[in-house]
Image 1: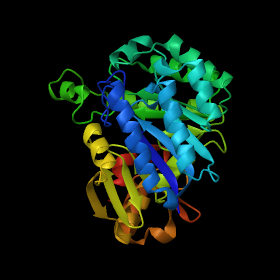
Image 2: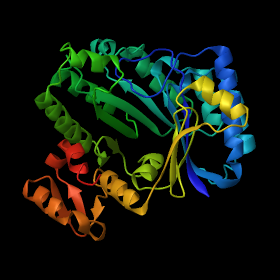
Image 3: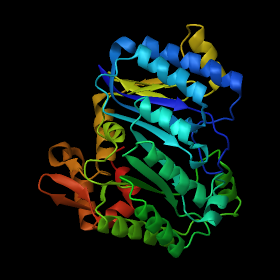
Length: 363
């Protein structure tokens, strides 16, 4: 049985200039057709799926209206065996949080929210193209608490041009005062096919790596002092509040992805659905394949991926699984990037700063 389910909801009320995930503006008829296709795709997997975790990503999943959520959530409850479900996460934009919607989501079984605050500095939010301000984000957080959510994550971005160390410190401080169970802090990346990538290429934007390193170190220090452990390079949680869904990815578990652009890895095979909502919906509803890419996941590839993801986590890379990279790991140990604790290779604080570089040796 497949135990981990990802559902991609591609619709966004606003296209942020740094986001490279597949997304598009919503039209009512297009959304309705998409939901029908999504439920058809879910039905086709029902006999092989008993999820322990579900994750609604996007896009902006919370951009769906209440009637659309009622159709989607009711349809999933009718079609899938959810008796083993432990964690059901939805990504939410603060601009799309409302009391009635939050109440519906909680009563429908969703028990974790990852809210894309990104910053508590309104000038930084404007530069990121966000449609909410800090006041709306705080209001949204309290709405979710009042609706009964006791597992809330705040997502933040550092390394934004014009974002000072003091601004980032204030963002961390305000986040901690709200007492979430989980925080994600991602360094800004300039992804192809985004407005920020274009600006980087023509010199309108430039990263400050020294400042980013200071912001990263400040994050670990401030959050650690409040009892958050850095269980993955960009993710911090209170004990027992780690994202179970993401941990399944990082430890190489099988997972199913539904919706346009969604990846799946099941039984040694990996595939991606069509990256266009209209074609995805038409193909699915007409009984054709929605897959536009697939590959074999060999034991060798899986071992490499588990090592690359594992070294980024608190659990590290087991010594028994590291023989083929012994020389590289010893070299990085000499450079102060990794350390051997008991029977596992773990990133050092300096290694966490260069986690992507370290992970490259495995892939």
